[in-house]
Length: 74
Picture 1 (cartoon, rainbow, N blue to C red):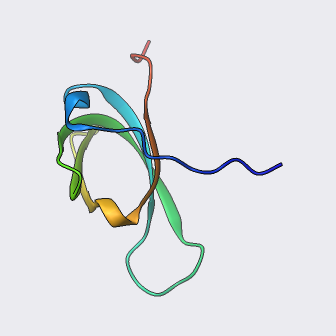
Picture 2: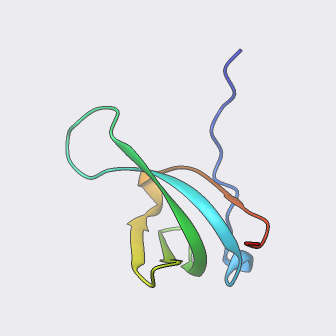
């Protein structure tokens, strides 16, 4: 059984630790990447995630495949 991917992130999740799965830019089918970090901005059009290394990952909402809030890091 396949389960649909769902983006469960809203602007109310700013400051939360999340994981988001994106389609990479370009025309290569099946290329996705995950980003784990803290939501800095989420307005429905773009997501801005700050990783543990301090890098800012920004991507358009239409490339987001799945996303959810994660428990705090240990």
